[in-house]
Amino acid sequence: MPAKSAGTATKRADAQRNIAAIVDAATTCLSRDPSASTSEIAKAAGVGRVTLYGHFPSRTELVDAVFVHAIERGEAALGEVDLSGDPRAALARLIESSWHLVDRFRSLLVAAQDALPPGRIRELHADPMVRVERLIERGQKEGAFRTDLPTSWLVGAMHSVMHGAADEINAGRLTPDKAAEYITATVLAAFTPPGERVPA
Amino acid sequence: MPAKSAGTATKRADAQRNIAAIVDAATTCLSRDPSASTSEIAKAAGVGRVTLYGHFPSRTELVDAVFVHAIERGEAALGEVDLSGDPRAALARLIESSWHLVDRFRSLLVAAQDALPPGRIRELHADPMVRVERLIERGQKEGAFRTDLPTSWLVGAMHSVMHGAADEINAGRLTPDKAAEYITATVLAAFTPPGERVPA
DNA sequence: CTTAAATCGAACAGCATTGTTCGAGTTATT
DNA sequence: AATAACTCGAACAATGCTGTTCGATTTAAG
Figure 1 (tube, chains in turn orange, yellow, green, blue):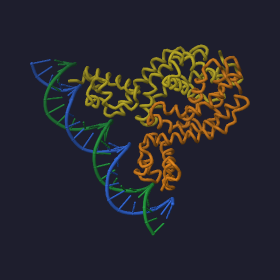
Figure 2 (figure 1 turned 135 degrees about the horizontal axis):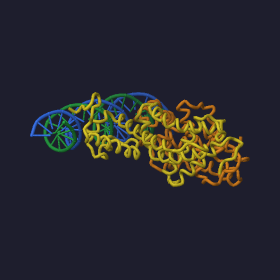
Figure 3 (figure 1 turned 120 degrees about the horizontal axis):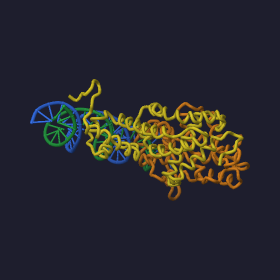
Figure 4 (figure 1 turned 30 degrees about the vertical axis):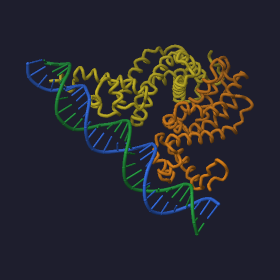
């Protein structure tokens, strides 16, 4: 009787291991090629294609699971960032952490964009978004960040610059070690209220 | 005898019309869906699929032709922008013009990215890029723009913000009429040298 | 040790795409 | 009006993907 307690259909140990292997393999495969096929992913996971479909009813649901997993890992990392104190310093710390996530998972975002139904991505991005938004709002209230542009725009601008940095690295015009520094300098300047001096 | 002068294989008038119609239709189709099929494009052009392949040997070459055409139109528009005088004002004018192009052709860029061989896009973007780069370099020499970040990074950052604006519009968080204003405010602040005041 | 769960590869059906071929019909050009 | 260029739709082959079914085999769990 596989049902230990009511409702929870307990999977066998090897099944759980394979599921984890598939999600892991899918993460790396989709990060390399957003349109990676299920064959490719199954092979990378060291598993038959049938097994994959045994655990995920469709490619779409697999991509969804991978995306959810990535978001969770991101949330965990971002949750440990100290967002107190001077908003500018806090933003610098947040960028430092966020940047690595964006760089690592941006191709995966592309995969999600043309596999998942519209709106699903923003639904999953909502929580991580809030963290950034809160910090920016606090900075605006304290006069550290400009208020002549909407908070949502500033969030988007920060996102855009990070994505742009990933592109620059891909194009070979930027080295990964300098990225965080450039992003921070650019965003801090962009957030400075008109009439105020840009921090050095 | 269709050969009027040596070498130039003169196409018949209706053929020329159809080619133009195909490129036009492809532009709008690929702008809506970067993975639009040749059937879709042919139908939109009011032309048989065979005719399309009669003029373009492969889907790839059609995408290339569309992209080249778009770049040419863009170059023409940007060539009329006055880039003299205060670098900040000139940049604002350049953004105003560039923005519309980015907004109109960004999906087409996606189509090009996964249809054209790597490097081809940057090859075609080289000329338009120079225009922006020159202006930023002048601004840097005159002390209007920061010099603690590479020119190529600043170019990329401007590009990223414009692309981000297009995303915001797509997501319904931004209206097209405010976009140029937001972009300009953000980029001008981002370009301000550390220690200097952000222009109002 | 017994049983149920999980695995495997091969093979199938279905779908969409690209690019080509054919023959018959239409239209611009001179 | 004669000719060559052009167009059309239908049909074809080749490819690659998704998702499913089959029967045989391995493996975890009580």
